[in-house]
Length: 305
Length: 272
Image (cartoon, rainbow over all chains, first blue to last red; front, side, top):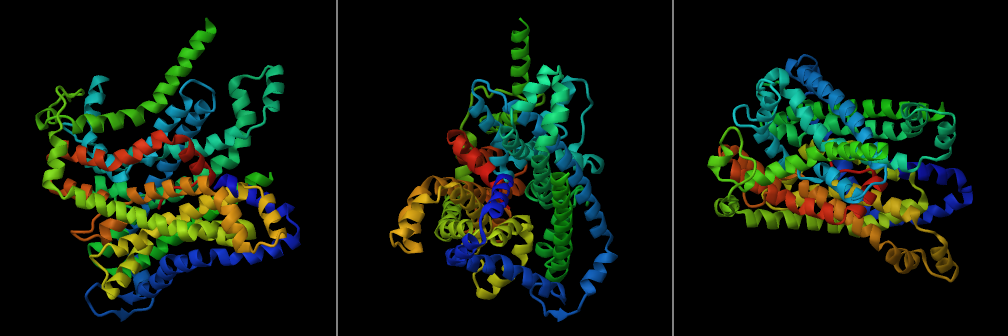
């Protein structure tokens, strides 16, 4: 997305008004896609708002209740807990992949034998089917027979309960998420590193700068826009994380790893409480949009300064 | 000497960053090739000796894996086909018209949680009497395939030089003809990359099939998840099933890594 948007921006600035006016003739090419988008994306949004204003259980009479579902959310302790779980999960699942992904990108930016193949191996986790890897992690987390506790025992660390213990379940799920999505951050940052100019490094070397100084004062500021893109994408994805959490814990033990998305799913498809679930959806969506707008605003600010 | 040390250090760091990916995949392979006795022993048995295919036979015998496989192929195939049919002209139109607001729409589709499409569409499919058939799954998978595909195509058409089409327009071609006979043939590599990415992310998707799939129509990831809930004790068949589902994607990634990495960085995309 990063490069595409940058290119688009440059294109706007360069194109004279006449070119843009002519461009309108091309819009009919997009109509069929727009029609489908309207059917499967815009319609559901409208309908969600409608449903959220009703007391609506599948198989029962629905009744218009106005904002009652939202009022109920304000006092729903399980919902508030889910918000905290989501934020806790998201902060960890953004910060760690961004750090590891940047380190990996710096390594893959060098030239070395088998680089293309190893880069493909590195991105395997993000391409793999989430349900499949979640299954393997579930087996690895097993307290008695899991390979993770065996590896810990080799270095003298006592066995952990991982996802079977409320206090460690979210960090354990973050571990899976970090493994899963660090490659995406790596790819975005690698795109940024590939576009770096060489001159600043040459003059810095002549001035006797250390490797760390060059990274801190040249590389980091230049790849900042890409890091922010990675942070925005990672934030959105971490907030939406579902497959691995649902497969590994289904929100448990108890409700210790119940994020907004899981709570939403349970309301809709286990309790069949469609109206209430729609209200949760709307709050969830607003939260995602607000957070991503905030991050995009930061990105703009970083660009201007 | 210093240079050699540096190289060894660098090689070691490469090894460290790729090992988590390799180890988890190898562990999946190892679990799938061992007997249940070996899988249940502690300390774990790492290398299957001798390796056995019994788990794979088990998966096919006890489940209708072939049916689910065909379901997955139909869903990913049809959803990607529709994405290609409407997405190529859409990507072209948006790139040429520089319709950034329309491009934003695909971005918003990426931001939205899958469940927020799923609840209203679930109700709608019930009213239409489509639940239990494969069509709801195909239709909802358009939410995944279409945005990815359009985004890749926008990037691709923007990178194509405009001279050839302009020459065609000056020679009296209509916009449609310029698209059909000039831009489209040039766009083939972009279409291939976009199609592969949308097939992969549709293939991997769990939640749409989990909610909308019936006994006959579930996709592979859903079938594998159901194995977990029903036979939690047997690790071998579970790992074998997981491997069967994800192996095509992993092999595809390794074989055409250049195109996939190119498409991913151009689009900055990933499925819902």
